[in-house]
Image 1 (tube, rainbow, N blue to C red):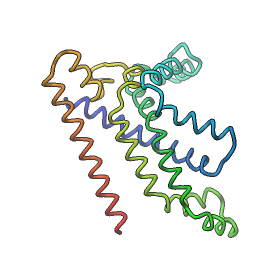
Image 2 (cartoon, rainbow, N blue to C red):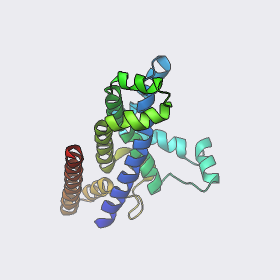
Image 3 (cartoon, rainbow, N blue to C red):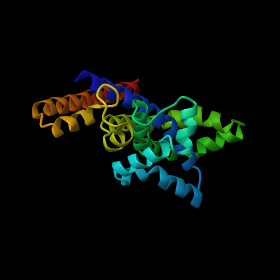
Length: 218
């Protein structure tokens, strides 16, 4: 029981980190860019919100398989993502990415443009402006997006099952273990795992909320 939980926490943590890096970067671009190209990028980023997880997992399976150009190139580097826990990280990261991007974008767009204009007139570089002005003012929205990404990655099932499979001790995350228990007719085990996942999610979310409130007060 503990192995699926630990694997889920590891996958969720790494996925949230990757989604945070990609989401904040994309949010900073989308917040200040206009045009058809950027609208298309925005639509592609948000596809995981509307596509069935199995479809997303199927696309990832095709893209990262050894027969694909990308999968073959990664294989030559010794990186194998299909049917490994690394594939679960990739799937959860992509599913969680739009949550970080949307939340961070809204927070970044709420930063007064006057402050940014003043910084530009003082000769500050765009990256310095983002790191010293935009991000500190938008941190609450960014953090909210990261928390949502972690929670979403913790409960990811469909895309993970498609690309990582259901290998006990290797790729069997907690949601997949619950599915496996239900399929096997093990109601007691399914109930225990479901309660474990729910409890872990509640404890983590409450802890992060308390930390956020403490930071806000100080």
